[in-house]
Image (tube, rainbow, N blue to C red; front, top):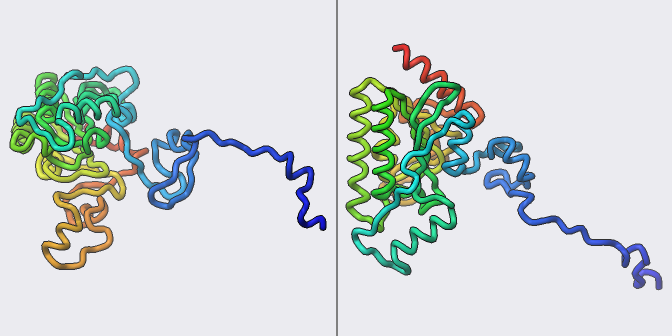
Length: 279
């Protein structure tokens, strides 16, 4: 009975071992994408154009001309004024996130050039405690805004945040007014502020400086809002549109100025700065 016998060829077949980490599953179309191809495509799915999240340094490297970025306040971190403890202490949570993300805080800020135009820039990183806005995040934003004022430069802030940082309570909430006031000083000097909203931008960030830009740009299908859709739906007891809180929905309702594909963001910001600088 040859059916029940394993052929010699079958027994000598070698199993092909594929190293882990070479492939990524798209969160949107569920297709498997080669990681190097994804990186070459600015972490945009080549099959469905889904925009994967970028870290703060990845974002800055994408926008700022190579070799021109000078980081400010790289060592600045939050304190623990409330001595907050849940499952672990706040200080231990900060240390854990610093080790995981290789960042000191949820924002990276500094100065550089974008297509040879000098700018001040800050990029938030959602991988660090959900990009939450603690006192150090607020302070770093204010300092880079002050650097823009002193250097007579436009400002670009790349937002990615879940909102306030609960471990800092009122200290976190105060950063909304603090950063907004700094943007007011920037505007009084006639300097341009461009806000780039990425997935996700929520809570106190969207309720303050994220929506104060002279021009507000968003990446395709980025989720932007204050409270989550489920909370809103339960509060108003109404069915929400399928694209609710997506960038395209906000554009259609006049809350942002444009939705721009990631590959076009750098040239779009450059054009806007050149136009607004001449006004």
